[in-house]
Image 1 (cartoon, rainbow, N blue to C red):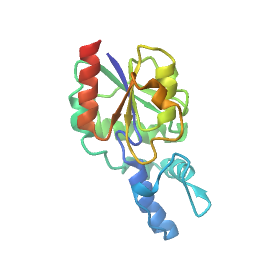
Image 2 (image 1 turned 135 degrees about the horizontal axis):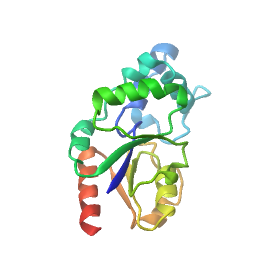
Image 3 (image 1 turned 120 degrees about the vertical axis):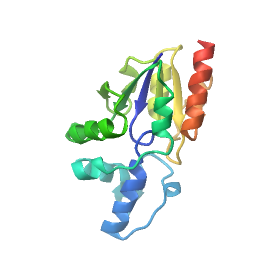
Length: 187
């Protein structure tokens, strides 16, 4: 099976890292549970704009922490064609590829796609933390499966419930591996 894996929120903890910078730069302390939607704002600033600004700094990008269990999870997917798909801007690509090479050297293929266009990626499964990407992906073909890596910001009012036969909701990497095994057995 071909498995596309998002970086931010699935492999890298960009929200946790950004919240630390927001606290240092703006003096506002938030936790991940405060981020309850994709377009969350603080003090008139949108979090995703802040993240885009931060990712343009190679030092910040190279220092992003891992999502717990992500390295072990990726290693358990040997036997499948696993690759990265991200909506990160092109100005972050060099540092992103360096970060991947350090933490996930087995992930060689890299696709950049804007949010909402990941359905164009040639894959059987998409692992992503944003419901919009999962819905567009599974809606594009009835045989495709989406794994929504759950965070407080993952559900944003899409019609994801209409695709329940194609979507798995996973709060951590252990359940992602279980979902992929279920998909593999059913296939």
